[in-house]
Length: 346
Image 1 (cartoon, rainbow, N blue to C red):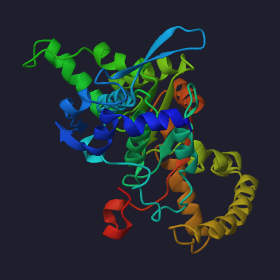
Image 2: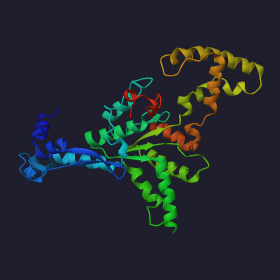
Image 3: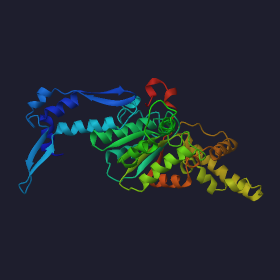
Image 4: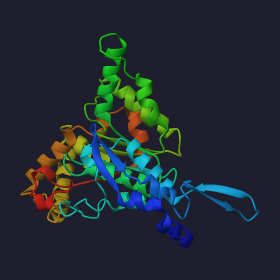
């Protein structure tokens, strides 16, 4: 810790006021931090004298100008306001995320550590899990930390809302809407170069037959993939085939067992019986109850194999690039909206 910097913060009137008088409010559906400042008091600041910057000389004697601590804090508040965090999550932080409803309270430690130790070009994460498990809370908590603590520009985007805006822009610009809107390119451009993008609802409403949404996600992912200095965090209700167990069961004979070959079916049943006991060892420590018998386990495997995965919602090329850009983290927890108040995770 730089003692001169800490002393500058403690003496800077603008910084002190910003730390004391800021409130997160709902501004047209977006989180907005209001910072109230007494300009008369700032003009008498013993650190910057109201100039909001400091002058100093380097080792070679050259005069340098740098922002005061208060100006830096003001800039970080502006970054948070520009990130377009939904108003519902205006106060979301790592500290107020309740982890006791999670199957594994430490499941998100990797993500939180990555945010707190963020550096340019770090690989992102995909937060995967059912609705109501706190994925959006954690994305917005990440934005809060990166903007207000580290001063890094970020942007939040709900992909389904983005697709709706793109559709509306076509209608409006074709003469069907009441007012001109941004074009698709104008909507996408801020997302292609922002240092850290938080893309929520990946896969929602998408499908390989939906050309508009496929084009949008392909453009975002491919352009950001091409720039290794950019980091992207995703959240999705769809599990990847790797994390759901799909690939594991395929590699251990599930597909072959459906071929009608007696030997393949027997080999699969032998594997499934062994797996049934291993699965029950871990399910007892999670929210899911143990399987009653092998048949119930086989029914669960069949459900996994038939369900829609993230790879079914985007093109194969895009899915491959997402896997290169972000490491999956599965959040297993009940829907917080169905929990008692003392167990909710936000």
